[in-house]
Image (cartoon, rainbow, N blue to C red; front, side, top):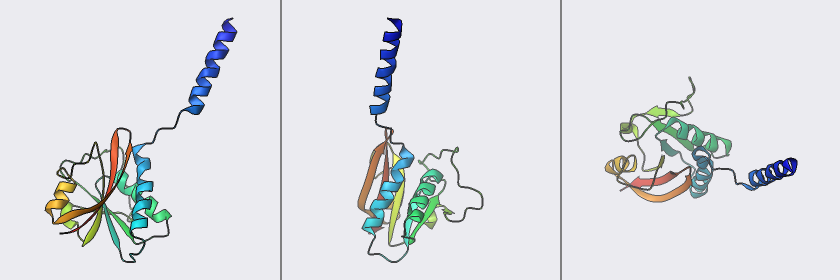
Length: 159
């Protein structure tokens, strides 16, 4: 009887484990969002600037764009923007020059992409509020929810 109960419990646990959908981690959201940006910019042959505000986000976006054949996407990470938390566990490798490290005064271009994660959409909070005060307006928004957060890739243009 004990073996039957134990065997049944293991069988039920195995079936539950096999049927459970794997969780979508927030860092896995950047590749599908990058693919959406690539489709949107498919006619653009010039440089496309993408600004992230965390090293982890910047690295995942760089990897997604670099893995595709669309090399016009240039990723930069904006440091020390107030209101944006940075997880010190993630950092860009030393001597890794593929991602430009900059401050908010170096954000430039007639059309840019802003990548960040937040609990919900709020265009008054950093980084969108900050970039908006620099003279940019939202043109399109791509987002993906994961782990109680939302990853945003926002296309912005000068007003």
